[in-house]
Amino acid sequence: MSLRVDAPGRAASVRRFGPATRWVHRTTAALMGVCVVTAACLYVPQLAELVGRRELVVRIHEWAGLALPVPVLAGLASRAFRADLGFLNRFGRHDRVWLRAAFRRDKRAASRPAGKFNAGQKIYAAWIAGATLVMLGTGLMMWFTHLTPLVWRTSATFVHDWLALTIGIVLAGHIGMALGDPEARRGMRTGVVSREWADREHSLWRH
Amino acid sequence: MNSEQPEEQEEPEEQRGKPIGRRVLLGTLGLGALGVVTAPTLQRGLESFLASASDKDPTGLTGLLPNGGGFRYYSVASSVPRKNATNYRLSVDGLVDRPTSYSLAELRSLPQTRLVRDVQCVTGWRVPDTPFEGVRLSRLLDAAGVRQGAGAVRFTCFDGTYSESLTLDQARRADVLVALRMQDKDLSHAHGGPARLYVAPMYFYKSAKWLSGITVTEDVKPGYWEERGYDVDAWVGRSNGRDDEPTS
Image (cartoon, rainbow over the protein chains, first blue to last red):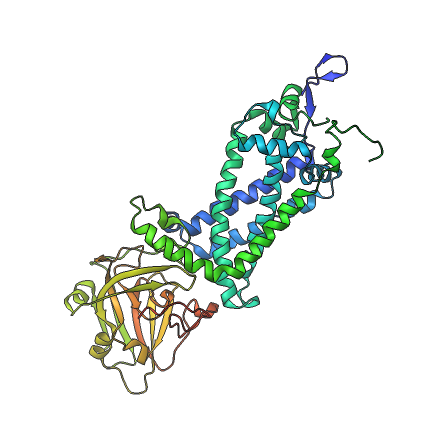
């Protein structure tokens, strides 16, 4: 990529994500994709009939689910990734402004101040992380049935089923929003975004 | 932070703001745990709501929701051969005087019994008022002549994997059928057609799909799921740690 200089000291593009963050995102997305596809094959009757092989599909689903937190845990070794997690964790006053604008469906960039991550991204990241751990916990209860009483297993199945549906919808929203913003996708794919995009979408981000 | 910034400068909040992300994560975890604890109550409420909603739902989409009042397809085999009137056989053997094999037409020519009961799966879903129709198992057993010393019946399936068992007393109940029809239609392949076992008072895993063999034995031998932890005597509401309303 060319770091073209259009004004003294100001490159046209800015670095958004280091390799660690991008690989964590990529591998997590792949594992989540395997979980979703295998879940659909276990759950949607038409797909279940088409695929069968219940034992095998269950095995793949279990192992992909078990591996799902691994990329994030491995990413903790990277300082850049830890810094990104820190940005995701901390909410400032501008995040409340952003959320209020989002509730009002005010799409103007000026009314949606954001740092490196906007408030929606922060809430999504925290929620999907928590939801993944709930899926992992309830999944383990369904997997190792002898560890918990059977009533727990049916309760775990109930939570696992409904949360899976919720995750499916939220994930579709996440992917839909990425599809609507090619520059954001470029940031995750190559690590670099245009300065113009960064200044507009993430005005408070000090890059 | 080492420097005091004026209030209107928002950048430092990137590092200094409240750790709300962590709270959202922990809150989600807490809600998940709460969901597991309150699941039995929630599930009952949702089931009755969805059952009434699915009655009025022309799209059938509620059937895809968890506990949405529809059947779920479970097969433990990689692929199940299809059988029809020309190649289907049901054998009755083991501790009997007259081992027999029935074609589908022969089964259809026997007196048929129609039962309308709820179907309850051990994983929680329930389908209300589902008609099943077929030959009473007791009739097939009597026709074969069960010998002295027999105590149980073992069922095998043409998926090549699944198996089930009942005690002889359970097998002779009037609400245990070799079902040929479900919901007033011939049993489809997906529902275990052309013939499946139907054990009305028990959890649905007892109702083995794709039934191909009935063997009278001395003792009960645990079936496929029972080897994997489910109860052999699978009375609805009185086994597997569940308290569902009995189905028969």
